[in-house]
Length: 193
Image 1 (cartoon, rainbow, N blue to C red):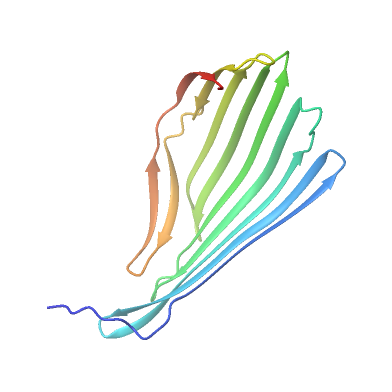
Image 2: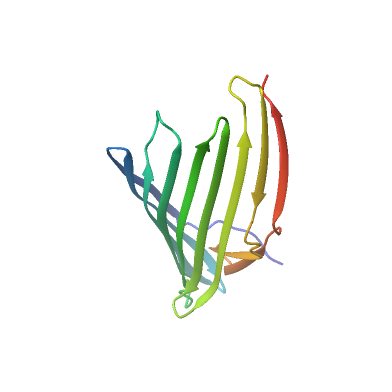
């Protein structure tokens, strides 16, 4: 028979988010990071084990800053995530490297085209585990002073089948592969009240 009890050890957690932006004429440079550290204790087979999880995400990017003459907006950048875990004798580390780009173009009178793309390589300390990329696009039309908007949206244009994540808790460390919905199109009509 198992009897639950509380340990007298305190779990700890710290998270910080940093973001720096610098506007230069009609452009903006972006750098940032998110850092998360969690330490928790576990009692297993009459022993106390201290487990840690440390996640680091770095982002560098560059985007346009055309507020008044918004005919073209684009952003390019790079994300890197490092997840480090310590749990007993197990110390895995996972990396996700992901360049990305997005664009928004206004043309003719009332048309807006948007597209975004990202590529990711998911790896551990020794090898690449998976690579995947995503691309979405939309075309919208709204006549000036009209309450009606028409759109065509395409999701998962490259028909990517899966992506990866990893996580840890008091019992195990896991690396998961998720399967996603294949490419699809949506035709939309919107009326603004």
